Image (cartoon, rainbow, N blue to C red; front, top):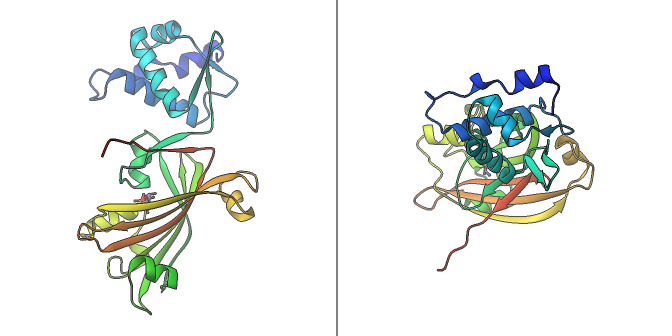
Length: 253
Ligand code: GLP
């Protein structure tokens, strides 16, 4: 539990409002999530109990419980029987494998601020791998976008996306979201096919992702298609193994 003065600032009831079109428990979850991911609540801090939080925010214990359950499911909190609720500082996110979302949308929907650092942004003749994946003739050009993606400043993934110049004529058109840019050009991503495998991160990649060399990661190759089945994007990415769970929903065929 933070000291009294800090607690008053961190658990300020004015962050919740009845006039916001978001249920109170989600507003509370968003507030606590920001405190955790920004590092304002420390890993050594146990979270105050349900009753104290309910009193501090002027809401019911049921609402507090629902918010804590939400953050536990996201991996930001961990409940220890009898000892209380503790904070997992590094974001641990779940991504549904069946939802076709962009990185920007995915992070924003969790209340996290997406970030990108450009590693390179070039126009080049497609490699044989790119030509095969994108169905291009020899000599065709692609835009290659190499980015380090982060959430609230924590690096999560390295992505190398290749897009035929037919859909994205120049790299500089992409400032923040590739998918927003493609949609604004009339080329909406519609379907994607991904292959996942476990890898160990080599030195430079580990450095970028701020993990030790050899740390586990998920290597993901993705081909994204337009509605008519034309390949739009070929992506190779490394996701930090300690920060991401990919969740798949199965149903009877
Ligand atoms: C996800 C996908 C990538 C895609 C990216 C676009 O991370 N796995 O294939 O390139 O989203 O994200 P944004 O629109 O934020 O650039």
